[in-house]
Length: 222
Image 1: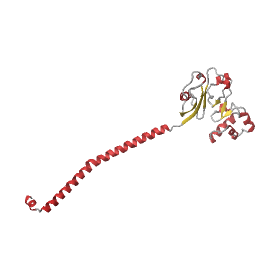
Image 2 (image 1 turned 180 degrees about the horizontal axis):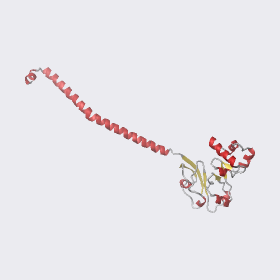
Image 3 (image 1 turned 45 degrees about the vertical axis):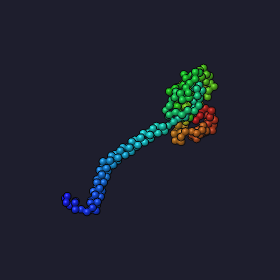
Image 4 (image 1 turned 90 degrees about the vertical axis):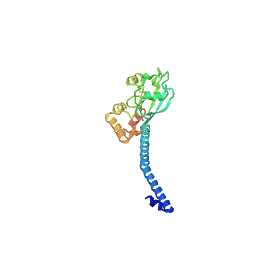
């Protein structure tokens, strides 16, 4: 072998050197691809999984932020009267806190602080010893605008308007000329057609004509 190598011409030796170099380079490339590229693919795959997981977490947070909201108007004895936005299911106490909390003159004994607020409601916080005859309270079917219980309403002789969108059957029956059958028709109508947009829409309910509406219009609201 040694003699063969010695007998090679200079040109042949150069060619052999080039071939060996190329082969060595190819071996290095093969080793690099198998040892490093695979690892890089694993790292890249892990990074993609991390990004996907982070994206899913962000989407979950956004979904929570997109929960249903209710907007209510808090007036009366609160530090910052005005419109506040609350998560659906919030209670009167949450609305008061969002409006800066109660003032020193507020009478919270007249309010059901645990009452769940509804979108579009106006919540009035009365003063201590306030004459509630001067307050226009609106019934929501389960309570009153400032959420006074029935005994307090009777005691203070407050005439409350009945919300025909939320009032239950028993509350509707307290309206003049509205018996059990008509009260059920009102409930059936709003369940089929959605909430009444104006009090005049109650005339669309079978059995409520112009004359009956005239006797109701000052006692109902939407």
